[in-house]
Length: 162
Image 1 (cartoon, rainbow, N blue to C red):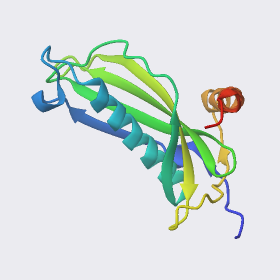
Image 2 (image 1 turned 180 degrees about the vertical axis):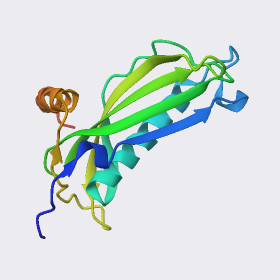
Image 3 (image 1 turned 30 degrees about the horizontal axis):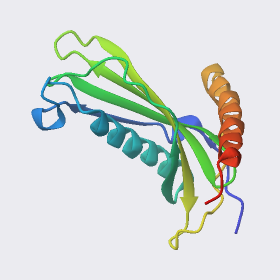
Image 4 (image 1 turned 90 degrees about the vertical axis):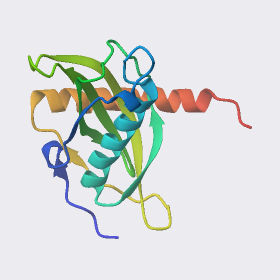
């Protein structure tokens, strides 16, 4: 298989914006955590797909906090970018914001790091092109992704076999 050319982070950055409707909410009028998690997985997969140019599967999602609620009628904004590529796996960072409709005031409500694996049409892992961090922020996320991967590998190795 020919080696793929590296890609910049900006080539696969993705954003989703939508209004929160009543069917997305709990009885208190806040978006359901599961709905946010679904959207995080979807936008993360889009960024990974764009970067790898192949199918991707979700391998893991790191810890996720819900810092602030997003209410019915507010806008949810999700931004995703590939932080680092290892072989076939990619760490994608997703930030979630709420935006007030009339004031356009934005508040960071959640973040998550997801690992996606590039796969071929048979579901077999395949190499993904390396990512080129260009800005200082991208370089920081690239370094930190390496640390998080080492931690994930340590956690995986600690789990008892079934």
